[in-house]
Length: 104
Image (cartoon, rainbow, N blue to C red; front, side, top):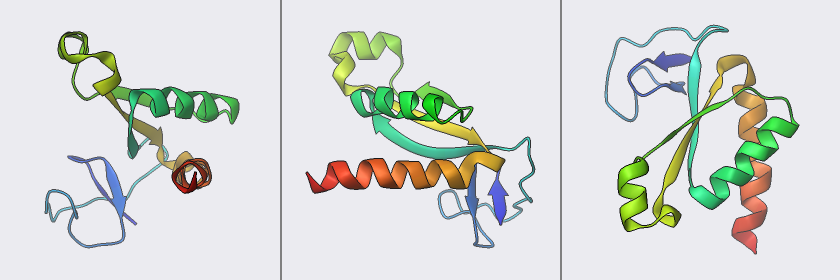
């Protein structure tokens, strides 16, 4: 596994699939990894699921408070990040939850 510190993603590739950076590092227990980006409503639900499963996480807003207030908070998106040791468990939860919502 390799880690791009610019995009905060973990990949099996030699280069980052997002930015193309080639000098990727090995993730460690302190590495903060990108998990997923979701709309505000789904993001709130995901935050609750991560809390219930005792998975530490951080999220950033994509638009920011000012723009979200102007165009409407329903257009806001959250980017979720988790520590590397929790990445696989978090990905499984995301897959389980959002796969079932996509089928509905």
